[in-house]
Amino acid sequence: MTLAASLLVIGRVIFGLFFLIAGIRNFSHFPERKNSKTNYGWPLPTILAALGFGVQIVGGLFLILGMWTVLGALALIIFLVLATCLFHNLFLFKGEERNPHLYFTLVNITLAGGLLMVIAEAL
Image (cartoon, rainbow, N blue to C red; front, side):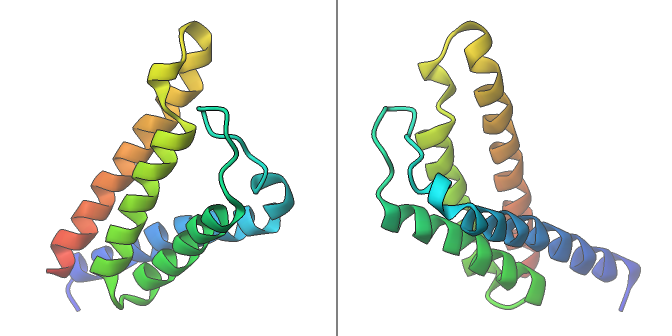
């Protein structure tokens, strides 16, 4: 295995661990997380919260194991887009209230960009 190939595997595993750990943490705090209100003031249905956390775990595992990486990365991108729109819509806030949402929006965009690179490598 070349150095470049080794680095791609290591990077993909680290990336997958990020989502796996986030999903496990979300499920471990599920009683509080399931009652979270979106930026629009309505609670996310419990089944959708569980589905989102499951996508984090399964998508992360797909990346770690190097199987179905395109499917896992696409599912995680969809998760990131929905989470950003529902919980970090920075356009709904002004002033100092906007700052954390801007930060999380930028983080999620960056994660989606990295997932696009995972997809490109897998094709």
